Each structure stands twice: as structure tokens, then as C-alpha cells.
Image (cartoon, rainbow, N blue to C red):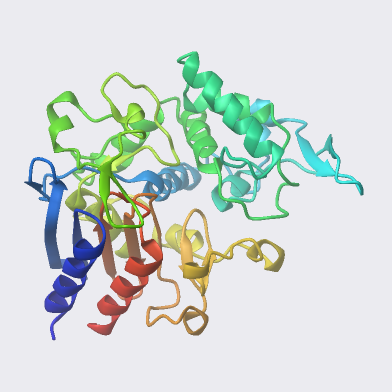
Length: 384
């Protein structure tokens, strides 16, 4: 069977049991070797998934934000081990939540500063909102307050998070959270531009990514694919809870989860990274910088928290998963294959060694990533 027939069969099986529709593109050594659109962007109106469909990237945004920050790194604007407070002074003299022998929470001064690298590697002590720790609870309260006051921005969020004690000492653990949103604030302060403008000027315009943005333009709102919740019984219902930040009247540009894009647009970005930082004559990032980005930066202690089952075999670099042990992961991919995924099931896989990239798009909760993504990877590499 050819790559196309294998992937077509797999994508159709996904839609039969999961999302209303999906799309995928695979590029190899500068050539488009697979592109397909299956099912519906809107099942109520029978609007098909197409090259015009715009998807919520959610955490795929993180790869773009980290790439943008590394552009500034290449300009000498910061070093990875610089204290964050040199650029965002609100992070000076941070406090950390700890527990005593009786389990009571107390705060103490942090033993060291958060570094810029801690933001890239999710080792800062910052978290997402949630109920798992006092830091998570306070982060949720702070974000809701900013939303109600219509003050939610990268800079205001950074200041609000800096007022909350950290979940752990910087550098001690890996914890998925708002680190890349704060990295967005760092980009704004250093560049003097909004995050959206900096990324547009330095990534989107050079790569001709005209359908990638934080805020969907009014004339493109109708192209936004619907997001669906899937019940355990397989029933699908529309979810609009995440759409407030994408609307034309919004001003929040989340560096961790805010971008929208089409399959073709994001595939250009992915293949630029697979091609050593250059695409169509446009140099975005240096090849040596991509090598640094895609090394495993976690030590043994931090790797204990990087334990998501479907990411077995991977380490974590500067904002990306990176394959370090194919045998442990049960993977036929290369050492150094890297990428990330998004909350609604979007996924990117990049391999500079083979110069291959793959982008998969869907819009569904739960996202079935642990089922879909390793299978897509196996099929692609099995066809090389």
C-alpha cells in the first residue's frame, strides 16, 4: 500500500469514530507528498473540511511562540540563563508555596530566580489554572479577575502571575502551564511590539502565512471550523466556550494557546523547521538554533514529571517534545523528531534528519491524541 492509501484509510477511520472532520498534510524534502481533507467543518450545515478551513491551534501556538523568542535569542537580545526579572521586573524576589510536616501550606522565598530558559522548558514553577495546587487556584482567580475587568493581556497576565507564589522552586520540576504565555510577554517587552505583530513581521509574512492570526478577521469568521464535544456514547455537540479570545473584538494574544491557522499555512511553518530554518528562500531561524531547540533539556529529576504515557520515549526541549528513545516509545521515528499538539487534537511532527514534516488538524474534545498521533507517525515513517 502507498502512503496515500494508508493515511486515507486511517483518516477515514478517525472520522468514523471521532471528529466530524480532519485534514492532514505531509511534506518531504520540500515537496508536498500527501494532502487530504475528510468530513465536515460544520456538521449542522454540511460544510466540508477544506483548504480554507481555519482551526484553533491551542497549544500548537507554543511552538510558534518559542520560535519567535529564539529569533530574539539569535539577535543577542537575551541569553537562556538570564534571570527573567532582568526583562520582567515583576518576577524579582519570588515566593514559593511549600508544605510543612503536617501538610500545612506556607510560603518561603525562592532559592533562585526564574530564568528565561525555565519559561521555554516549563520548569519555572508557573502553572495553568486548576485545583491541583494553591498556585493553580490562585492563577485561576487572577485570570478570571483580568477577564472581568477586560484587562487580559500578556503583560497584565505576567504581572498577575508574578504576584502568586510558585508551585515549586524554579528548575526543580517540569510542569505544563502558562510559561509560554509569559514568554509572549517577554517577546513584547524586548521587541517593543505586540506578540502578534512581532510574529507576523518575522514568521507569518516571510512564510506567506496569511491565514494565521490570534484574532480571526471578520471576513474570515465563516471559515472557522466548529469545535465539538464528544460524549462517551459518541454523540457530538458544539462547543463555543473557547472562542471569546478569537473574535474580532478581542485583544488577548495568548502565546501558549491563542493562534488560529489553516492546514497549508501551518505546514509551511513546520516544513521551515524541518528544512533547517529556511523555506522558499526565507531564513527564519538558524539550523544550529533548531538543534538547540530540539535537544532534551530536562534532567532526571525533571523527567519524572514529564510522564504523559503517550509521550513515552520523548524528552522536552525548548518548547517541544523531542524523541530520545525510540525503543522506549515503541516508535519507528528518528531520534530528534520533534513537535507538539493542541487541546482539540491538532498535531505537528517535524524531522530535520529526514526533512519531513506532518500537520494534522481536527477540532474535538476529548481529542483522542493518544490514539491518533502515534498511528499517524507509524504510517508516515513506515512509508519512507
